[in-house]
Amino acid sequence: MRQYCQELGGDLVKLADIEFYCDIILYLNNLNLPNVNFWIGATHQENEGYWLWTDGTPVRMGTPYWFVEITIQSPFFGNDYNCGCINYFEYYYFRDCVCNSTTLSPSCQAVM
Picture 1 (spheres, rainbow, N blue to C red):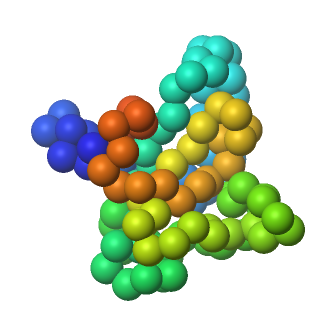
Picture 2 (cartoon, one colour):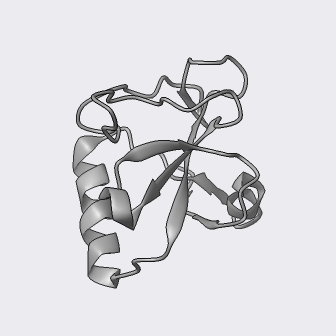
């Protein structure tokens, strides 16, 4: 999915700034797309457990970004879940997803 954004001259979205992240959530909620999940530019494919944005900066863990499940507020799936995503049913909190999933859409941003 990153390649799709790069072909458009951008990259997968980096949601490191809380205000930008909130703006994206409001925008997606206004679109009312309950069955659409989105890739974001976070991954830990290179180093298991160490999440980075596509520009190489660290992804903030825990509150307010990551979804809570079973009292854990951080990525919690196994080694196959190496890419970041957000979805409507989990209020657009970050999740770790399978990188080759075909059920997610890319969320791209312009590269400055």
